[in-house]
Structure formats: structure tokens, C-alpha cells
Length: 149
Length: 316
Image (tube, rainbow over all chains, first blue to last red; front, side, top):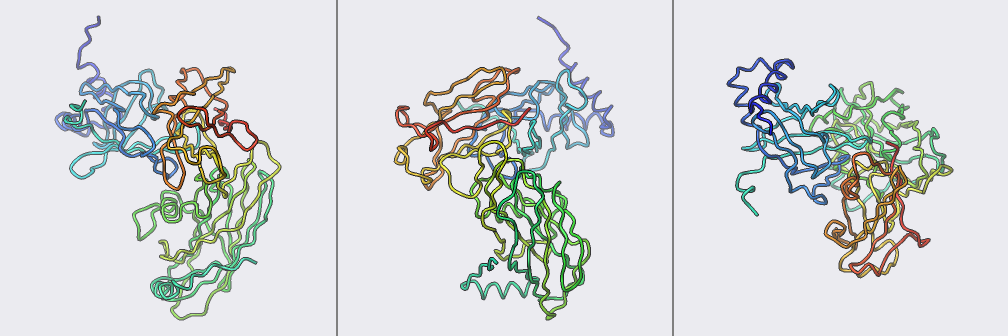
């Protein structure tokens, strides 16, 4: 069993953030930004080529978890831009940057965070090898939802 | 000549709206009735503009509805001739928001008009605007003009009804004026005929897709009489073929294979083939054959030749 420093991923993510220009934020701001986005996210709306396909797809399940230590895990419950786990960070406070393990620069993926009423939504736009475009809105799974059987 | 459709009951509303915005009416569209895959075709859209307000900065906006696989944004040029001069129209960037809306032009037209009189949802509206302003003077004479569209058909055999829309405002006129033509037949290419404009028992969109897309599969019980016409539950049975020549069959009636009713005797299922067929990371699909069955699997619907419906995946 490995005994990795739990803060190792966070440090790596913060270092990556510095390298990508996010160091205009203070460490405290960075912590607050991380706290805002860390959690479990699911798809609440999916649009393919301008057609809403949310109702026909099983999107109720967890898609991605942004961990507080700067790592993320992606579930293969739905088609998504990123299929491998990795590390995440933020830039310009409202851009979530996902860097899959072993990824080349071109594989780094960005989602935008938008205010949605009192909560925050992540906006994911991507294609998957065809010229079809996908637009997802992700919302954080609330604690009480997790408690449901 | 194809006369423009007019709705007498909405005439008063139309006239009122014309007072609020410059009205453009498409009178006639000349386009070929047949073409070959990948052929460049020329289309003339004859229109008239009623000048109902003063606006020195008006431009003409022109929408064109075509199958997505035509890649019309890259393969279309638009010019015009008119009583008020001739000129070019340029593609409006898909990200450009209409002035009085908070929506980009493609989404605005798609949301308002959808795919028009077609039934296969794999089409897109693209928008052009005159490079020069087209000033309007309230009470001025009606301006007549012709928009010339030069575009290239897609590489598939297709039947489609193209759509045209024009407005003198940087926003959709609140007038339902798209003009849809009769069927254009694209023939002489490879592959099965893709029919955008007539009801069919089975359809899949998007037409051009890979196994890592969401596919919308629709069963239309009204397209022709079948032995599932009165079924209370419909399931899909499918066999996928991989590049390495393996066949993966899904035939059980489960929640994952059950189609949902969407009204008017139509049923639909969305599948993500990579998950639906439980593909390994190194597997990819070349094609899929499928049929529709009842819960027992005893009543099945195939294509009209009695063979399973077939879908080809794009090269990956």
C-alpha cells in the first residue's frame, strides 16, 4: 500500500495553476476557488448539435468528482470529453482545467463555471471524434441527494 | 414556379408586424430537383422587401437549412442582385448573437424553425448577411431582388427539402416565413438512401457518427403498418460489428433496450454504442444492424425487404 502525501496532488495542481497563469490569485483565493468547485458533479442538461437529448439519456448518475486534493476521477456513466482520471485546477477563477494522467498538452480539457441561481454550473463543450458537438451543463450533487438510496 | 404560402387568417397580424420590422417575402426558389453527391449546385431565391421604417443601417440576413453532412458553412457562397444594387453576403459566425436576442444565430433559427418540413433531425441553419448596408426608407417602393446560393451537396444519397429564410433585421422577424422547397434527390452515390423529408419506420441521428457518440434511434409506428403498431412496449435488438470482424449481439428485453414513447405512435431510445455494446478500449465499430421487437421478442419489425435496419459508422 502506498503512503502518498495527501497534499501531493493539490501541490501539483497549484503548481500547474501557477504555470498556467492563475497565480494572480492569492493562496487564500485559490483555496476558496478549490472549495467552491470540489465535489461530485452530474449532468443536468445535454445538447447534441443544438438538440436537447437530456430526457432520453440516463444522466442521473455521478459523472466526475473533483477532489479537494486536486485530483479528479471520471466515471464512465456517460459520454464525456475526458475518459481518464487526472488532476484539476482552476484559472481565471471560473475555468476548470482537467489534465488526465499521462496527457499530452492537447488533451488538457477546460470547462467553464457559471453562476446558476444560488449555485454554480459547469459548462462542458466537446466533440468526440466525429463532427458532432456536445454541450453539457453539470451541477454539483447535493449532500441530501447522495443520502438517497 | 412555386408560389409563396400565405395564411389569410394571419394577414392582419402580418401587416402589424410589418410596421415594426422590414418585411421580406420569399416568392420563389429555383433549385435543381436532382443532383449527384458532391455536386456544386446553384439556387436562386427571389424575394421582395417592403420598406416599412427608416433604418439606414439595415442589412439583409439570410438563413439556409441544409443537411449537416453538406458542411454548408464551408461549402456555400451567397451573392445577391436587386433593384438597389448587387453585392456579396458573408457567413455570420456561429457564435454571433442576434442583436435583440441572447442567442447565436444557428440556435435562434434552429429553436424557432427546427428542421421545417423535414423529419430527420440532422440539419443545420447557417446564416449570411449582406456585406453592405441595405438602407430602408419608410414608405419607399418595394425592393425586388434575388439571392444566389452556390453550395455543394453531401456525399451521401439523400432526399431533402432545403429551407430558406430572409429578414431585414438583426433578429428573427416574428413572421413564420421560411420557404421550403420540394424534394431534392441526391443520387448516384454509395450507401443507403438517407431520407430527410418522409416518415420512416426507423431513423438514426446523427447520420454521421462514430461509436463514441450518442445516437437517437426512433421507431415511427405510423410510417407503415407493422406488427408492433399496437404494442405497449418496444425494445431494440442490435448486432454491432467491430473492425476486427467480431459481432456483438444485444437481444434481451431490458430497461437498457426499451424505447420510450414520445407520442403519436413514435418511440425513441438514445444509446452510446461504446457503453451499449460494452466495447473494450481497443474495439471500434464499423456498422450496426438492428430491429424492433415486443417484450417476448416474437413480434419483430425489420426493413421493408425483411432484413434488419442497418447503420454505418463513420471512419475513426
